[in-house]
Image 1 (cartoon, helix red, strand yellow):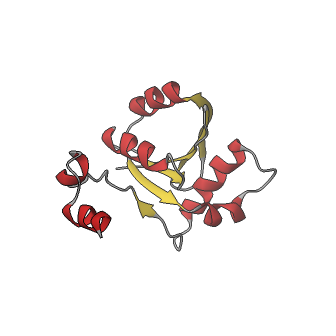
Image 2: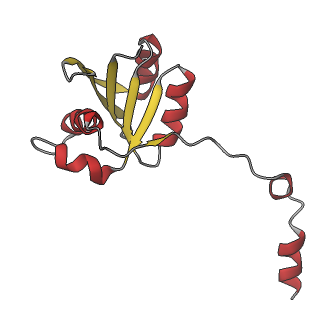
Image 3: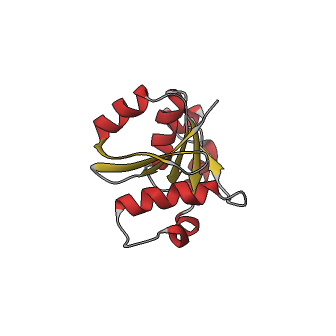
Length: 135
């Protein structure tokens, strides 16, 4: 059973994570590089991982799911009201966990990587597109 929630504030080089129990008790706060983050999460027992939905969130959601974690993405505008103090990465990670604890909070699960149909990938072109160019 997943008894830990891990809020992740994604950034370019350093990720801030905030771990808490399902009741809100703080378990850990860490500042990790990308590689350290992947290794740290691989060592953690299966947990609920919550991230703000952003450009790299879907990639990291797939990575976390492959490690056995359950992943939820929350839109940034739903997290902002829960930031208690100055806007920084640590406060954002904590706010993500607090927002996820709300029963009415809307979140999305991770998206799956979609493969494109063969004609688009092969460089052969598309008959409909080619005919539109001739027109």
